[in-house]
Every structure is written in structure tokens, then in C-alpha cells.
Amino acid sequence: MRLLYASHAERDPSKGSAWADLALLETLRRRGHEVEEVWNFGSPRRIRHDNLHILLEAPGRCVRAVLPRADRRPFDVVLVNQPLGWIAGRRMKRRWPSTLYVARSHGWEPRVHEELSAAAAEEEESRGPIRRAASTLLRPLLHAQNTRVVQIADGVVVCSTDDRAWLTHRDGLPESRVLAMPPGIAAELLTSPAPEFDPLRLRRLLYVGQFAPFKAPEVAAAAMARVLAAVPESTATWVCGRAHHPRVEALFPGSVRGRLTLRSWMPRGELARVYDEAGIYFFPSYFEGFAQTFLEAMARGVIVLASRIDGMREAIRDGENGFLFEPSSERAMADCALSLIAEPERAEAVGLAARKTAEGYTWEAAAEKFEQFVSELRALGPR
Image (cartoon, rainbow, N blue to C red; front, top):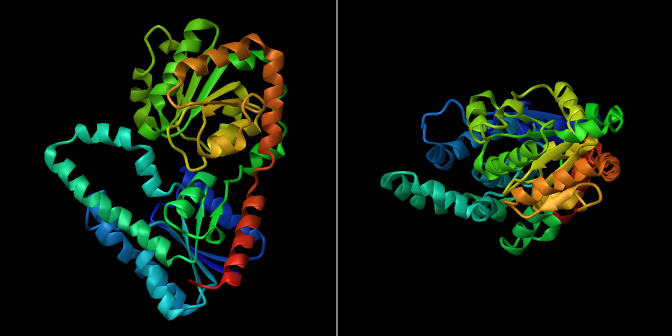
């Protein structure tokens, strides 16, 4: 298979979605496929406003990134980050009808907007009337790009079964043309055994993720603070971009703030050591495509307390290899963590089951699913 991958994002392995796509592409190479990459095709920008850039400028930049490469030698598959490849996909179909155009999404945008509509409305209220009016006008135009992708793409690759269900039930895309492909876990987190269980680990709390409203940082901080207040010997570590450390610190009461350690992004080998020191991982997001960090924590035997949504609901069996909660359940999360600290034998069993589950999430398995999907699309034929 000769594949071209095109992304509007930067080629930055420290960012979750970019790292996931890089890991998939490298695995496909190891499996004998010819893979070409083009990143950051939206730069340099002429339009500084993000939504206007995505609407008016980025789709054309994608055309100029993809078509000249295909002119040199046509590809079997062109995989483009949704939704900016819709013009490129339409032109490809005219020039190379046998090439499969596949859209890649780490979170289907219309579903993201609907799931986070309450939070989005609250954020809109904080803006001025001109910006609110502009957002109201632009949103349907931006969503129309996703509609065009659904109409044009030979297939769509998403992360979770929830996104797949949205595309099939809400957008009418045949199930045979949608792949729900969970991410894999970095090999270094799976090739070495998880550390032996130590009850003291349970008193070390952890959060890893970008500081963004959909990640519910206020919920994670509130739950962790409750545990810190109830267990004086407990500590908490929070990993996110350094620029957001002051905002994270402000979420914790002054009485427990001294037991909070803030860490910046780091290589996954170093992050593995952070996981190995922790015992309980808080992950109360309002929305996720299929997050990687909770899987990484499970791979190191850490007990995950997560929202009952998307990838977490798929991977975690509540009470067996982790725990699931309704969003905004900081009190229930804290009570669960305290019960685990009080019952280390139960916690040990959950941690062992978490590691066993994580072993099934490899990039080899993801690449095999992608290969099978492409084979099935070829059998169906281009749309």
C-alpha cells in the first residue's frame, strides 16, 4: 500500500493526536507499506483568526499539499485530517478515481460541539457581542465542511465507537465505511513489567493531560483535593503545559497546595516513571475521542477513575480494571479513591487487571485494523 498522510497539525510527538498518528504511520512502515507525510499544511497563515483560517484558507492549502504529490505518483490511499480535506478529496476523485480518500478524526467535530454545548454556551457569554455574532454565523459553515467530508470520503477513521455511531446514525454514513480504531500504547510502557504493587502508591495521585475545558480540570482538582485533605500523607502530581501551571495551582485550596507537584510535558520514557510512582489516576473529561493517557496509566498498573464516556467506557469494566463515573462526580471519585486507599488488596487486583487490559492496545493491532479497513474499502469501491 502506498499511503499519503496529510495533517493541518504540527508534527509534534508531545501532542496526543499527532503522536498517535506518527505511531500509526511508523507501524505501517514497519509492516512494509510506503508512507509519505505532510504536516502543518496550513502554514504560513495569511488569516490569523482560527475559524476563518479553517473555513477560507486551510482547505485550499490542503489541495496544494496533496495534489502535487499525487501527480508525481498516485497513491493507493490518501488519509487527511478531518474536515479540511474535502476540496482535495473531491478533486482527487476526478483525477485518480481508484485512489481511496479517507478522512481521519480524533473527535468528530459536530459531535464535540453538541456534547460540549453547555460549556460552549458559557464560554460564548464571556465574549463580546461582535464575537458571539461571528461565532453564530461561522459555526454552521464550519459544520458544513464535515457534511461535505461525509458525502465525499470513501471511508472515515475515528477513535471511538461513539463517534462511529454518530457518523452512521446522524450523518448516514454506511457502517462499512467507518472504522473505530482505538489508539495503541507506546511500546516502552508495555515491554517492561509494571512495578510491583505497593500500598503506599495509592496515596500518590496523578493527572496527565492538556489544560482545556473539555478535560474538566476543575473536577479532577476538586476530587484530588478532597483526598489530599482526608489523607495527610497523600500527594498529587499534575502534568500539563508549563504555561497553565498557575491556573492548575489556583484550583487547589491553599491548605493542600503544598502537596501538589506540577510537571511539564516530557518524553514518554520519563512519563513512564511518573506513572510508576502513582497509584490512582483521575480522568473526569466531559469529552474524549479515545484518550491515550488513561491507557498509559493502566499499562503501568495505575488505577483509573474516569468519566463514563467514549474510550474510557470501552476499555474500563467498572470495578474490575478501573472505575467509571458520571461527569462532574468529584465527590464520588474522591470517595472511591479513599476506599481504595483503605482496601489495598482490592486495589492490587484492579491494578493487575488494568495492566492486562492495556496489553491489548498496541499499535500493531491498530495498524492491522487499518489495513483490514482499507482492504474492505477497496472491495466496496470508491464512492
